[in-house]
Image: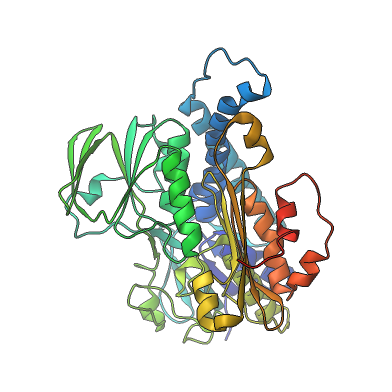
Length: 456
């Protein structure tokens, strides 16, 4: 059949943009449609602006620690939110422009509109009142914040989409959730001087991560002033004024705050895309079902990133998936399926968390008595002078049967940077003996990783 395009991508986030660019570089005729702004959640309202807010919040530590190093700080500097907000907007606009320019440079046609499937090969361009066809279609629409409909007043809350655009920071906030988005924003806002409450219906925070790491992060955040309420199931949210909210829990607790943020997860953004018209199968929560090569049940339709049923909702995962789809379809390359277990990741709280490989719980279930656990907990050098009591924690998991590294879990400054390298070592099958044979770089936090000798 003759089609307008070889590949039509719906959604110009990280995964969709990478797939479009790589497919075009292989000579394919490619179009990409985006109804909001090019760049997706990560660039526009996620990873990038959030990490910049993390940097801003950590200046508070520098101001507090400076006197211990001889700096005479006569007055605590004041934080001005509008200045940071405008800087974030400018950086987001710059990055979105770079994404657009890169697509144009590779010959990808950009359609600034919503696109919906009108059939197996047909795509309706909403607002342009025309329909085009494509030999292959890629769904890369990502996910959106999920707010429960069964909690009265939940609609009064903001989500991670709106947090970057507030006219002013509230003096107090209740963040509902216990996943990485919730704990990151709890840490950020606390660092910026907002009285922060984190309400999580479980215990401890960060379900799915290594249990010891979860407990230590919760203790560290509480020590920094985050008010953590576990086993706190929200019953209702009441709005009494523009900056006056009451959050009621089923245990009878009531919190009065100036703002409420719901961060209880994200849901695949598939509503209204017309997937049923193409016969694409979805899971119960609306995610697109895909195989190990990101192909749906319809042979010429693919999906990557958070819109799929894969568990790893991370930007680099979507990028890798999109790249692989383009290489297989148009580059003639046999790309190995992505392995989702133990992908290295960081949680940008303060202190920072990094994890790769298996959790101790999963490793113990798989390897039993062969599991060796190496731990180190210490006060970083800078804290001995500043007077800060916060400790760094490191844990390495080793399969004693073959001495291979199978997990790494870090809490402290630079954890995100270190876990990238540890993730590479785990993926390469490195052994504990190889770590032990490495000369330490002194004095660094990282040297602890090559000096832990005795299993705990």
